[in-house]
Amino acid sequence: KYIFDLELCYYILSMLKFLSRRMSSSYSLGIFSNASELQIQQMNEKIVLVDKNDKVLGSVSKRDSHELQIDGNSQLHRAFSVFLFNSKNELLLQQRSASKVTFPNYLTNTCCSHPRFNQEELVEYNHLGVKLAAQRRLLYELGIAEEQVPIEAMHHLTRIHYFAKYNHHWAEHELDHVILIKSDVDLSNINSDEVQHTQYVNQNQLRIMMDDKKFKATPWFRYIYEGFLFNWWSKLDDLSTCQDDLIHRAGNQTI
Image 1: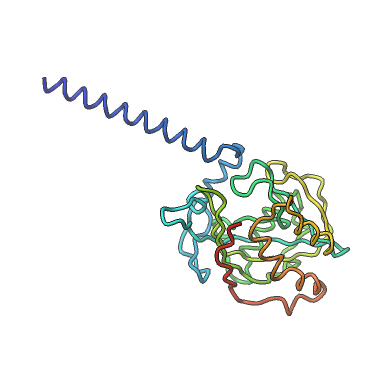
Image 2 (image 1 turned 30 degrees about the horizontal axis):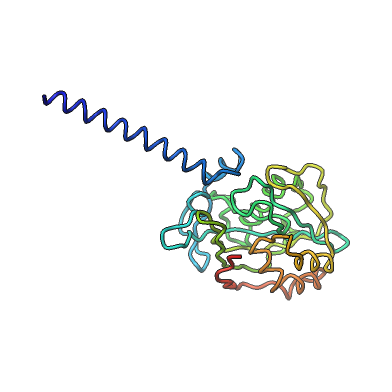
């Protein structure tokens, strides 16, 4: 009798583990329903967990940092947003791919991503780590070679702390470093898993696009567009007055 009960317990436990794995797998398929395999794999990358003053607290996976918690918040992490202008003073925009986990198909600035939690991209001096991360992602997303966007051409303008819920499971909660670059670049090798469309725009074209309800813009891009972008745009040849050491508190930017 005792042996039978023990075997039954083992059987029940094994069935529970099996069902748990099945449910977990189905759940993951649900929350990643539109994401590509590459996008899902990237959710395991370790990025930089920070406090509200941008002090490094440790590492966190992209998945854990973007998942909504029970309290409706998500973990604050370091990010960057690149605004790249050509010699005609036109801004390069991208439309995010349909396979992105958060804000797929949305219009946004040139490139947005996260520094990795590694020695190179954690360098604080002159924001070098963030700039190296920006170089890496510009190459990965848009095929822009490092020599076309050298570190010395990157202007670190400011930092923005914002929160934006995407859906019932995902959110962005970022301390976003804004980097501006002026360079003519080659866009012949765009990564379609990241970007579905690119376009250079002048100021009037961008205003028309942002006023058109059919264009969905990412919340961080809209916040920067409304509060900062045109001031920077008017001073592309001398950005010294645009740079600060502040952290602008944007609050909840959920659309």
